[in-house]
Structure formats: C-alpha cells, structure tokens
Amino acid sequence: MNIGVPVGARRPVRRWLSAQTMAWICLAAFWLYIWRTPIWSADDLLFATRSGTSHGRIAWDRVLPLLADDVNNRVGRSADMLAQFIFSTGPLIGIIMAACCFLQSFAVWRLLRAVSAQFGKGDDVVSRIVALAAGVALPLSLLATEPGLAGSTVMFMAANVGYVLGSAMMVAAAVLLWRVRERGSAPLWQLVLVVAFACFVGIHHELLALGIAGVVMGLAVVTRRSDWRPSWVIALLVVLAVSFGRYAAGGLWKRQDRLLRPFPIDDLSAVQQHRVLAVFAVSQSLGVHPELYICLAAAVAALAWAVRRKVAHPQVFVAILVVFVVSAAAMAMVATKVRRNVTLNAATLGRAEIYSAGSATLLLGVTAVAVAAMVVLVVSVRTIAQARIVVPVTGMMLGLYSMPVLLGSPYGRTLYVPMLMCMVASVTMAMVALAMVRADAAQAAQGADSAQGVGASATMAAGDGERANVVAEDGERASRVPAAAVAAVLVLAASIGPAVQGGTHLVNAVDSNIVVWKPVVRQLEAAEMGSARAVVIPKNLPRADYAADYTGVGVYYRGNLAKYCGIPASIRIKTR
Image 1 (cartoon, rainbow, N blue to C red):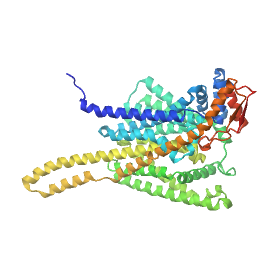
Image 2: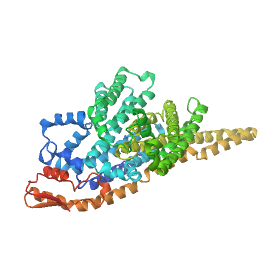
Image 3: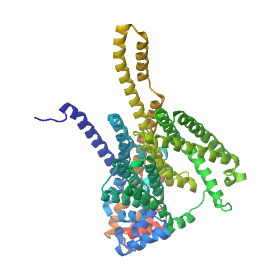
Image 4: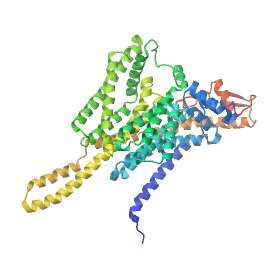
C-alpha cells in the first residue's frame, strides 16, 4: 500500500518545479547569448597580461607578489587577482562571465526564498512566484533604472568580477549566515566554512565588506538571548573584524588619493569635505533615481502599517512611522532645492559653497531623521517571526550605502551594489507586508466563518440581532483590501516591471557591438597563426555606453591586446 502525497497534490508541485527550472534555463541562455563574444576593456587586458604571458596564462611564481601589490599599493582588494585567473581560461571567459551574472540572480532568489520561508503556511505559490520573478528580474530592472551601469559594470569584465560576482557572493554569504542563525546550532566545520566565505567576500572588495558588516549587525539584533552560543559570538566577531580590518590595506587609501573629487574641496577640513560630499551624494541620488527611493519609502511604510498591531508599543510605532514619512518627503523637497541652487548659482558661488549652505545642512538633518526612523521601524519588527529577516537585509543595504555617501559617489558602479540591494530590500519588505496582510485577512475570514455559525445558532435561539452585526463586520473586514497590500503590490510591480526594458536594451546594444567586434576576433586568430599582416580594430564601438572602458585608439590597449593574443611584433594592430 503506497502511503504518501496524493497524485493530484503532486501535480501542482511538479508543474511549479518545471516552470521554475524553465525560468532558470531561459535566464542562463540569455546571459550566454549576451556573453557569446566578450569584448576586452583596457583594464581587462591589463590584468590578463600583467604576468607577461600570452592568453593570460598564470605565472604562478608571480601570483603572490601581484596579489600583495594589489592589496598594498594598487586597490586594496583581491577582486583583480580573481579577474586575472578568469582571464586565463581562454574560450571559457564568456561562459564564466555569464555564470557570474546568472549567479547574481540565483543568490537574490535564494535570499527571497529565505524571506518567504519565514511565512510558514503563507509560503505558498504566490510568494514563490514573487521570489522567483524578483530574483530573475531585479538585476535587469536595475539596468533599466540606470542604463550606464551596463557598460561601466556588467559588460566591463573586471568590474563584473568585482561587483556582479561580488554581490552574488555577498548575498550568498548573508543567506548562509542567516541559515546558521535559524538552525540554532550547526556543526563546527559548517560554521567555519561559512565564516571563511564571508571573510573572503569582505576581502574581495571593500564595498562588500561594509555590506557583510551590516548583515552581521542585523543578525546580532535578531538573535535571541538563548541563541547566543560562544561559537556564534566568535563567528560574528571574526566576520566583523575582517570586514573592518581589511580597511587597513594600504592600496585602498592610495587608490583613494588617486581618484578625482567631483569638485574642488581641498581647502576644506576632512570633516567638512565628507559633509559636503554627503550632501552632494544624497541630493544627486534622489534626483537621478527618485523611483528607487520612492519604492523603498513605500515598502517601509507598507511593512510598518502591516505590522503596527503586532509590535510592542503600537502607538509609538505609528508615531515613528509618521516621522519617517514626513522626513522622507522633506528629503525629496530639500534635495530638489539644493539641486536647483546648484543649477542657478554654481557658476558664481561654486558647488562646495552651495553644498555647505543652510539648505544643505537641512538636507543632512532630514536625511539623518529619515534613516534613523527607518532603522527604528525595522528593528521593531525583530520580535515578529515572519518579519525579522528584514533586519539583516536592511543592515546590508545601509552598510553598502555608507561608502558612496561618505565619498560623494551618487552614480556609477560604486552605487551598483547599493542600488541593487535597495531594490532587494524594497521587495523583501513588500513581500513581508503582503504576507502579513494576507495572513490577517485569512484569519479574519476564518473568524467570520466561525462567528457566522455561532451567530446563526444564537439568532435562531434568541433572535439576537447584535450577533448578526458582528458577523457582518467580520465579513466586511475580511473582504477589504488594506492599504499596506496595495502599497506592497505597487512596490513589487515597480521593482520587477522594468526588467523587460533593461534586458531588451542590453541585447540590442551588445548585438550592435558584437557585429563590429567579431571580425576583429577572426583577424586576431589569423594573426596568431601568422596568416595576416595587420589587424584593424574600431576606434569606437557603436554603443560605447555599453563598453565604457574600451579604448581602441590607445597604444597601451593595442599593445596589451597583441600581448594577450600572442601576436608577433611584425604584425601591426591599427585602428579605423
């Protein structure tokens, strides 16, 4: 006798698994198509040839000296050495780059599945579809929000290793740390591996280290007193120490000294410089990508409104929510005023002076209030089992944003990972808010059905009309569509919807560039075999915005390209 899940119940599960598998196959095919012909950037060729060997072959005796130079003198990170290893794989480079992009979506999906797993019975097909759709779509939606990131980050292979693959590893580390916390106890070897991986992510890139530090602080907030085991304490402290300790790398600060400021501020003190840069970053970010932060504010409000009756002090909680909404609106208005002052007066006053004015100080003040209110709201949900994962996700987002704000980087690839995690945090909050509303509605409907039966018996026995009114009120409450649910659905739609646009633009731009670059690949192959006298490469690609670091006109670029392909000095590489 076969006892188990009925055949009829297994069919929806199989259909869902088939649809899920097909979605991932389609995404893998998409990225393999995008990366079918990788196009070299200047920095890609630098890392691929710095061992002095053709085709990027690794000179193992130079690995440690080059890594030490990266950490101590150049950039203070290990990402460039990992890129060099990838560039040594020849025909596999495109497949590996496609895998980096695929793994980013997969890691985001696993994080959102960890979110929906907290819903218990509420972890149904709706939450799973949302998690899958968001995992697949969010990286592409980000490219629709900021198309320049496609060229400066995604299609720039060295940057892809640092930021795209780096963000995938960071999110994976966050999920693994969360799982260890959820289990309450884990074998020592598993804990050691998770901690080692999280530390590796922090060393990989300085920005990711702040994201990991935010996750650790969030996990510390949601860990119950009874779960504070010595091994867990040591694990969190080690990850936190490595995340902050890696900032002692000398190359990080030498690179920072080489970077140009967005405008002259050398005559200001260090504190004033960071204050001016913070105002610049906040005002420009709100102006360039307002939809991103509107979604985040709406998601915070939806989450807070959905859980307001379940927190310790509901009235205080609602008051903080009002403070958040008012300060967030004030941020938008004051940032608009600051940007308008720059437009009108930058030529006469200078931007540093404008970013030090009274409106700039007010912007910093309302930003601090809004962020503090958001932190209080998020931390307040730590006692709610279905919502506590929001705390480390928000911690990761805030950790990532701290560097661009302090350095005054309101756009470019420095904001790639923070913006992605802003979208992930918005979707996480919206999913939790929607799940809470649906659970409340189901409970109200169940209560109404139960009360209806009792009320009908009471009415038949005593003719009591008051009970019938109670039944009607419960039914009306179950049928209402709460504002939190509406806001959550809008946030999900706004976050996932632009993916088609981002993906379409990426395909069109990459196709245009590959059409021009494929003949170059054939010429390079012929030159390597000695059957060509010269190689002609384009001065610029048709979609230069999707190949930001391509410098075909540079002698340096052409020399490294010849070195990588092993082309003899007698064969010239020319531009046209």
